[in-house]
Picture 1: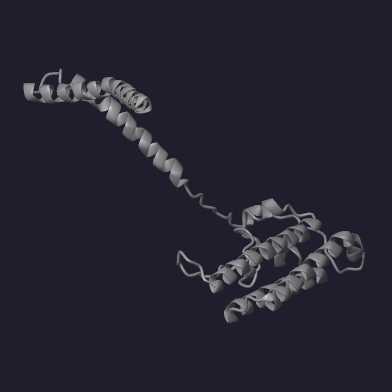
Picture 2 (picture 1 turned 90 degrees about the vertical axis):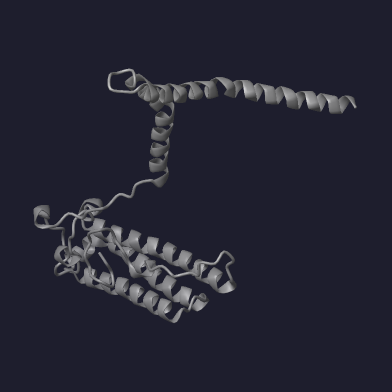
Length: 239
């Protein structure tokens, strides 16, 4: 349901009031940047309330919101003949229009916030009433019952999962550590086979010996350093 663009329910619910404001990429934020950031946070909170209301409206009719949102289904197809749906969409589109106009003129003050919040809470109240009096609206012919959905007729929404960069870098580090530790052993072992010259074998085994010496001396160096530091501290205290 791309409100303001189309009424398609697939690929999540992307609403106009979720539009991001382009802030200056300066380390030091001026008053204008702070004001824009505060307004962006306000838009995000209003966007959440709007999406919650959309979900509640859809589920009031008996539809599975989570399942429907996995497909590119137009809401118009699910609420044919519903007067309440027409009212609902009018309110939602009004929210989008007010938010977009506010962003165009870059009016991030209290008045702009009040206009947007009033329209969002108008939607919240409308959906609450719709949910509470749904059966009455059905009897009056203002609402419609849910219809059976043939999901095979609709395209499934593909959601790309972003890989965690930290997890990828950790995997690389693990392979690097394994390579640093075990590659000398592997090369030394392979050079014992036929086809390798004495020079290759000497270089390989020297590499292996140096690695082993490094591992063996590391703890000793730490202990020696600690002992030296401790001795110096004691001498200072004595003086």
